[in-house]
Amino acid sequence: MTTASPTKSGFDARSFSQRLTSPVAPYYLLLGATTLLLVFGLIMVLSASSVTSYAGGHGSAYAVFNKQAMFAVIGVIAAVIAARLPVAWWKRLAFPIYGLALALQMLVFSPLGVNVLGNTNWIRVAGFTMQPSEMGKLAIVLICAVVLERKRRHLARPKHVLIVLVPMVLLLLGLVMAGHDLGTTMVLALTAGAVLWVAGLNWKFFGGALAVAVVALGAAVKFSGNRSARFDAWLGTCVNEHTAGCYQKVHGLYAMADGGWWGVGLGASREKWFWLPEAHNDFIFAIVGEELGLPGTLAVIGLYAVLGYACYRLIATSKDFFVRLATAGVMAWILAQAMINIGSVIGLLPIIGVPLPLMSSGGSALVMALVGLGMVISFARNEPECKAALAQRPSMVRRTLAVMPTHRNR
Image (cartoon, rainbow, N blue to C red; front, side, top):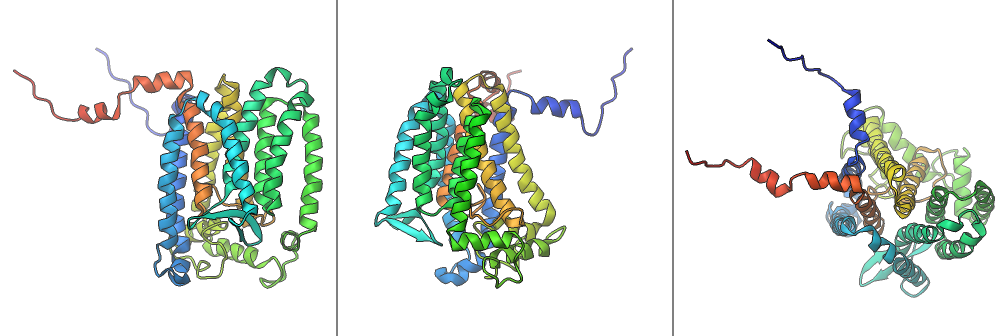
C-alpha cells in the first residue's frame, strides 16, 4: 500500500525559475507587461487630466482620456498587426519606414509644423497633431538592425560598416535636433548605440562617440536659456518654485512627497489642480507617486523591468542576428525613455521632457511604442521553440468548447 506524498505549499523557486526560462516566457511576459502598462496608463491619464480637461474649455473631465483611449485602440490594432508579421517582412519594411520617417520629420519645417513649448517637432494635418520623431525611433531600430545584419561579416572593420550607417542615423538625429527636441534626440542616440553594442562593435568606437555626445550635449545646454535653467535647477540652485527652471521640478517633488508611503488615493491628487504642469504627460509618474504611493511607483518600475527581462531573454536565446539587434533597439528605446522620464521626475536627472512609454498622454508616442513592442512580440512568438510550444496548445475556441456540457448516448 502506498501513500500519496504531501503537497508543498508556498513559493516554489524551482518552478518559478523554470517558468521564467521557458521558451514561451518572453512572449507572455511581453504581452502581459505591455497590457498592464497600457491599462494602468489609461487609468492614470484619466485621473491626472480630469481637472484640466473639465476646466480647460472642453467641458468634460474625459476629454483628454477619450482622445488617449482612441489612440490606445489604434495602437492595439497596429500592435496586433505588427505581432502577426513574420521577421522577413520587418526586414523589407526597414528602408520604407526610414524614408517615411525622414519625410515626415522634414514636414515639421513646413507650414504644417507646430511649435509646442519651444520644440518644433509636431505637424498638424486635418485637425490631428502627430510627432514624426516617434516613428523615427522605430526607423532607427530597423535601419540599424538591417544594415548591421547585412554587414555582419565586416563588423571587425567598423569603418566599412559605419560609413553606411552613421550618415543615415545622424541625418535623422539632426532633423530632430533642428526642431530643438533634445530629449527625443537623446533617446534616438541611445537606441542606435544599443543596437551597435549588441552587434559587437569595438569599444573604442563607443568611447569616441561618448566624447562627441558629451560635447554636443554641453553645447545644446549652454546655448539654450531654457535648458540651462533646467540644468541649474538640477544642480540644486532652486531657492523656491519661482526660481527659473524650478517650478515644474518643485511641484513634481511636492506630489511625490504628498503621496508618502501609501498615497493619497486614486483620483485624489492635489497637484493636478493646475499646480503641476504636464501632469498627465511628462510628469504622470509624479501623479502615480502622489495617488498610489510607493507601491504604485514600484509597480510601474517593476513592469518596465519585466519588459527588459523579456527582451534580454530574446536577445540571449535567439539565433537570428536581426532579431537580436532589433530587440535590443526596442529595449533601449522603451527603457532609456522610461529611465530619463522617471529620473527627471524624482530629481536624479534634469528635466529633459520625454513621455513615460505607454503611460503618458500622447497619441504618436503611444501608437509607436505599441508597434515597436508588437514587433518584438512577433519575434518572440516566431522563435522555433516558442512557436512549437504555442502550436501544441488548444485554440481559444477549443478551450471554450471544452467546458461545455456534452451529451453521450448510453
